[in-house]
Every structure is written in structure tokens, then in C-alpha cells.
Image (cartoon, rainbow, N blue to C red; front, top):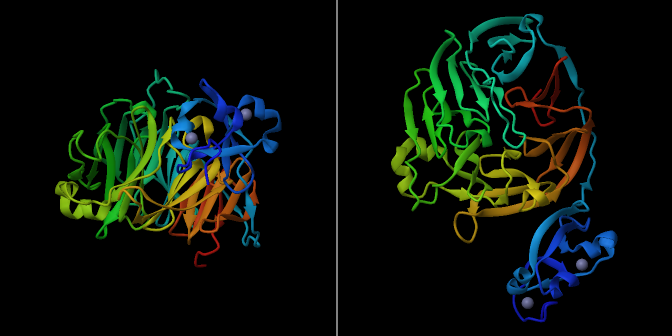
Length: 428
Ligand SMILES: [Zn+2]
Ligand SMILES: [Zn+2]
């Protein structure tokens, strides 16, 4: 059957209204979510007042681009499908220890938390035992003359290894950081990236584990991630130098997300023009084979582009499935939602993984536990089935900032203290 443009060709892109289809010059468009699942189409300004009643038809690739103008934004919202179940458990509140003063960030570790205080102290806090002790002190701070790039303020961020042996303080959207051995308080690795567009991304840093040993991953220059031993600062592996002929080149690496067991690594990166593109590869293989792993198949995966958007919610459901926040292919056309990809199932071109679900609703910070997706927006916590794309329940007013997978808790840090809630699948 011919398309609405009259051509007998495959449908391309999203359906467009008849004004766009028949325009003889470029016509700006809205991306309209119809409210049926994630269905969307392009409507012109004339269609806007009665968007839901507007008619749009599929067109071929040539006709799709023939009158393509700029984006005017989003109309409507993707559908949120509720499939409520009772939400068990209660949110418990614990005041922060007085000796910590202002707490800038926390990191859940074995036996409690590491706290970063506003005066640069790192403290080990066991809220159950009520103990709190200084374990290190950082000299890293946000430069007084730091200029935010597009609203991305420079800010201190704390990371820690799961066993609580090591921590790192970095300047997100900045250049500097330090890795600490918390047994001695010593700086084992002073971090400084090259500063090339470093204000566009959070400081790439993550702890992971390989064969029972803690590792720290960090960005040394815009396109190079290195893995080091946090006990000594010794470099273990690094990405090969940028080589425009290779698939992994040209990426400005951003937030790093190791999978829960550390077998894969995702980087929420961007590349010119600029376009955000999350990429992932096999971390175990890289650590085992070293730099030469990049000469063969390292499980390199590229997730769909989104123009001008990165530093987005990213979370692993397990070792294979990665969830990206936001629907849409352009920052101007993003809508709250989640997209789920199976990296063990490469798509047609071998590097784009299969998208197993896309659904509307999730926004804010993303967490995952026991196969479920948890999202924390201004309104509070929502719980999602990432296979069915349905919302299973909510905890209004609870806005977790951190996940403690070992204790199976979501943790909200505020000026008043921490609030915690146990995820339902976690062992009691
Ligand atoms: Zn129209
Ligand atoms: Zn056509």
C-alpha cells in the first residue's frame, strides 16, 4: 500500500501532518506524543491547538527530509501504564552525625557509609553502631573562578569502593580529583584530566572489581579511560590512543557505569556535533587481555544518539541489560521515559544492541535492583517493571540519591540526614 506521500516505499521516521507533508519549504515541527504508549508524530504550528485531533501519515525517506525544519519542542506526553502492587516497607530516617558538619556527599560501603564533609574531611560512619571517625582529608575543591557550562555547575562528588577500603573525591564538570586509601588516609592517585571540554561531563570515575580486587577507572584525557590499582595508583590498562579509524575514537567520555558484577562498562559520552551517545564494552576482557583487546571484538556497543543530550540517567539491570533515561533523539524533543537494551543481543549492524522495551514515565535518578527499575523524581520514588514497561507503585516524597546494593537499600541524602528504604527483593 502506498504511503500518505503517494510513494510505494518503506515508511521512514515518524508520521507527519499533511501541512508538513505538502510543504514546499522547510517547516518547523513539534514532536507530538499521542498518549498511546510511546507513539509520536510530527505536527506543525497550525496543528498545535488541536494536536490530539490532528491527522498524520507515514512518508518515505525522501519526503520525510524534503520539508524538514527545526524542532519546536514536545507536545503531549508518552503514556504511563500503571499496574499497581502494594509497596511494602517503610522509609526510616537517621540524622547525620553531628561531628560531620555539612555533608556534601555520601557513599554506601561495607559496614556503613563514607561521608564527605564541606570542609574536606572524609569520615567513616556506621549509623547502626553510632560511630563516626575521620579517615582522610582532601585538598580537592571547586575552583573559585569556575564558570558553569550550560548550567553544569562544578561540584564535589564522592565515590568509594564497595568494601570501603578506597574512596575518591572528584570535581564533576571539572579537572581534578584524588583517590584515597582509607586505611591510612594517604592519597594514592592524584587525578587531573586534560581539561579539554571537561566542563561538559561529570568527572569520569568509578570503582569496580576484578578477581576480588578493587579497581578505579578514570578519564585522563577527553577520549582515554584508564584503570588503576587504588592501593598504589599503578596503571593497569588504558584505552588505546585516539585513532580516527577505530570505532571507539572521538568520544568525550562522561559518567562511567560499571555493570553490577563489573563485566561490562558503559560511558555516557558525547561526540561532535555534539551528540550524546552512551557506549559500552566488555570490561572483563579489557582487564584480562589489556590494550590488545581493542584490536578484536571487545563487545563494543553504541546506544542511540540524542542530539545535545548526555549526562542522562543510566543504570544496569544486570550484566547484559542497560537502561537509558529519556525518550527522543534530540534534547529539544526529550520526554520522560526509559529505554532498555540487551547488550548480549547485538542488532543488525553488530554494535547497536537490541532495544527490548521503551516506555513513558520514568524521570529523575535511576536505580535498579532485583530486575526492577526505580526512579526518583521531584514527586518521589516510582517502581517499574522494565520488561512490561509498567509502573508497579510509588513512594511519594521519597527521593533517593544513592543505592546501597549490599544492604538492598535506596538512600536519600538531605541536609537533615539520610532516609532509607529496603527494596522488596532484597534479603531481610
Ligand atoms: Zn500541520
Ligand atoms: Zn514519499
